[in-house]
Image (cartoon, rainbow, N blue to C red):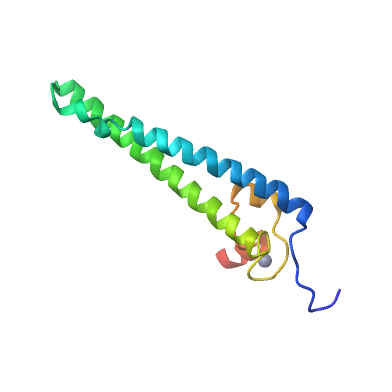
Length: 124
Ligand SMILES: [Zn+2]
């Protein structure tokens, strides 16, 4: 192999990953919308006749939604990053050594930009 050969993640692997990520992104966006709607703080009528217990429930419900929404938002960002790397033809290629990143690693962390060997080196 020549030195100038640019390593690219094989297309036959990229298309199903891209499909998967796009589906996930759709699902996450839908979940995020329904979670936002389920947030009791969004309920217009909530202030009308609230007992203390209702208030506590609302607070907890609100916190719960916020935590879930934050988590979802993080996943959405990850997937968007991964999709943009696919577009750039950089998906699955280590930024440090230029080798292909393990697919198992990509399945867990689709927006990862370095391979496991380089990660270990960085942590060492
Ligand atoms: Zn590497």
